[in-house]
Length: 157
Image 1: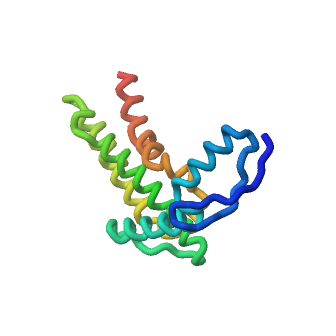
Image 2: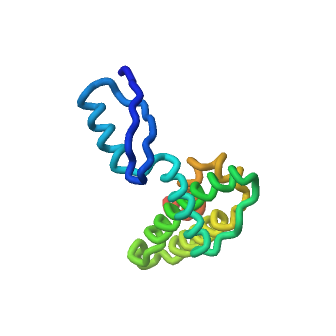
Image 3: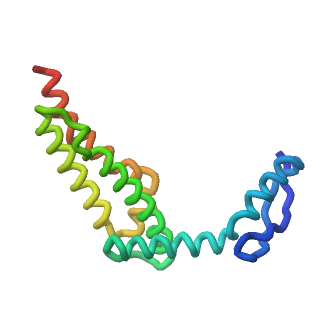
């Protein structure tokens, strides 16, 4: 697909050049999509402001690193923690467990709490950047490690 450059007026009022497909249909679709959004610079500013606000609301510790690392890592951290908090809420619900599963329920609750606390207390910006993809499954991975021995023991009975 060939690309050509065209300036797009964004919702923030900035006009920014973008590489667009040469196909007229695809070009119009992309132009329309871009024009309904703020420019990339304004979008990053808004995303960072939202991350800072959530960090304050959740009382997360400040990040350590260069200013650029911290700015990027804070956005990553909020996305990861939001995802893992939602997962935590789903897996620790009472109706996920049957009678006689107190050991499984305790293991899930404990592992979920410890895993989420680990994420919320991680302050190295470089860690967030390096683990930005794997961290989305941080809690899931820790839960699997916690419940596997219980499930294997039950299967062996």
